[in-house]
Length: 113
Length: 113
Image (cartoon, rainbow over all chains, first blue to last red; front, side, top):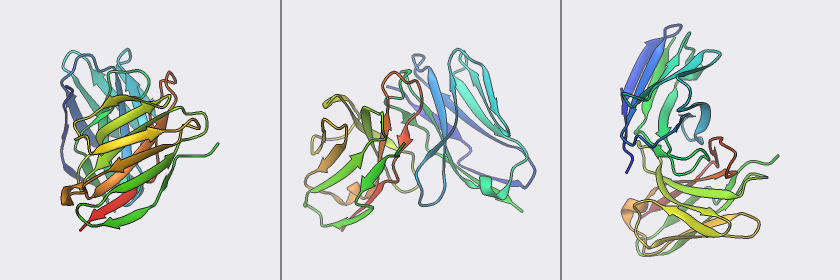
């Protein structure tokens, strides 16, 4: 089955700097890769996703890149702000329909003022 | 458009007891998936229901069971509770074929003592 690894487990950056979180997956059949942000005590919220037919996707300060050959994808946050502090999870799915995600273990991002 | 709602929000049970958690899917969504999120970890897939039938199952024992009703709401039942069952249980709904990521509910925090 699919296995998703995520690094680093914790990340501290200064406000205004960039943050990068990397994930690798094992199942070459996976074709959908969402990223979720989870604040303390709250539900995971989808922040960006990418499909396997696209190499990069950007939404304001957030971007995701995908390397299908190497089976890894990354989340990039630019101009970080204190409200970006949260746990971020990557996930992989072999379906186009939002089914059966395998999540990474999470990255705790702290943006220091 | 209503979101995914889960009940109860918190629950304390004794080892060996049984518990039922409930989830109402987002309007227009016909697929419900359940995840277990232990403290400090990513969500782990339990199972998914589509058109009132189980449509995929993760690595969880048979004492984890579920139902989906004609209105697409769902229940997660756990029998013979163990201490390790203590976790946040997340319900996510999606529209099969939509191609979009899940919408998660706020979860039920289950504590087994």
